[in-house]
Amino acid sequence: MENQSTISAFMRKGQPLTPDSPFHSSSPLVFEAIPQLPMTPPDTEEVQDIAANEDGIRTALHVISTERDSLTHLGELYKTSPMAQEGFINAISNILKTISRGGKLVVSGVGKSGKIGEKVVATMNSFGIRCTFLHPTEALHGDLGMIGVNDTILLLTFSGRTPELLTLLAHLPHSLPLIALTSHTHPSTCPLFIARPPSRCILLPAPIPTSETQSFGLPAPTTSTTTAMALADALALAAASRLHPSPASIFHSHHPGGAIGASATTPVFKSIGNLAIAVTSVPIAEGRLGVPILTALDILLTAAKSSSGWVRLSSSTIITPRQVQRIGKSGNLDRAAHALESGTVVEKGDWISIPGSSLVAEARGWILGMRKGERGKTFLKQGTVLGIVDDGGSVSGVVEIEEIFGEEEEERWESVGF
Image 1: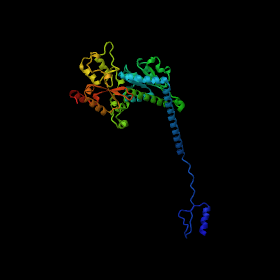
Image 2: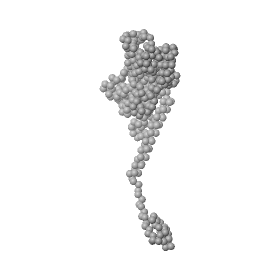
Image 3: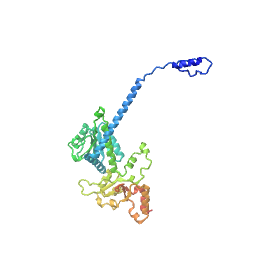
Image 4: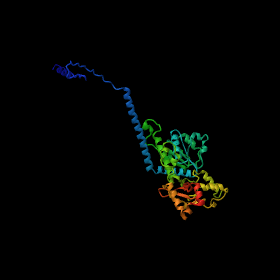
């Protein structure tokens, strides 16, 4: 009873029992009080780190949401503004015309805009659109020599009044198309277009709804560079889709390395559309000044500027690279183009249409099957031009039949048949 009274007294005082205290023991109980531990205040540096991290996240979310809003604003502009749409369409048309004439897109900018320009060049080239970067300062020290008469100029500048670019413009021929990717929304306000022919000036507006100083408290290029990059990417992809029946295959063929190359699980030339050369990219032969007729030499000069080796004499007549080589080997380069050997120039009506989605193996099988009949032997001979039909039902690309079977196999078929 005495032990029980002692326990009750300790419990009333709030003293805990030690873990090894025996409730049923004949030995006297010994109780040890556990001292209270002092409260430890939070680490000041740790609290500051948490606050700093929260501020960092808030800043990041603010930047991301601001740039997202700017891209939304850009999309609405090109969705609703006829002027912006017209500028974008004209920019694509000029780029395609430049490539078809053997020219290139020349991109220039300074500072952050220059970095965007370098990325534009890399993207354009990966799509098979000839493009080069021209630093405006280096241009005045000899690099102006890279500009050709068939080139198109693309200048990137948010303000539209970058001194280096204005100085460069004074040395560029007025005959060259000038595309300006800038914050200006009307050509009349853009200093780059002063004293240049309006018909050669193309505006790609890339404004931002709120200035970077208002958004972030400093004028660091952030929202403006994101907006400009997005519009430049849109231009590259839109031009590639017009230039090539299959932009994806062109891109993969130019990008075999890295993770992108490793991710290509299917062969680049799986479908016949992947082999096609876009008709719009084939330059049309033009006569030389002072020569009254188009000659074989003019065809060779055009072929030298053609990235694919194909040459058109008109919108409906074409010469394959192999036929161009035969013209060069013939020796008589003063011959009139209309007097070339039969079969050299192929009319569009003689192109054999094949869906671009057809597999190369399927195309081979179809051609071989047709050649077993007399009709197929007539129109599926060596030198045949295959017209590649796109998803819209238009013949947008061309392929030499030799690309399907190989040069040696075609020559064997011509000599002995299959």
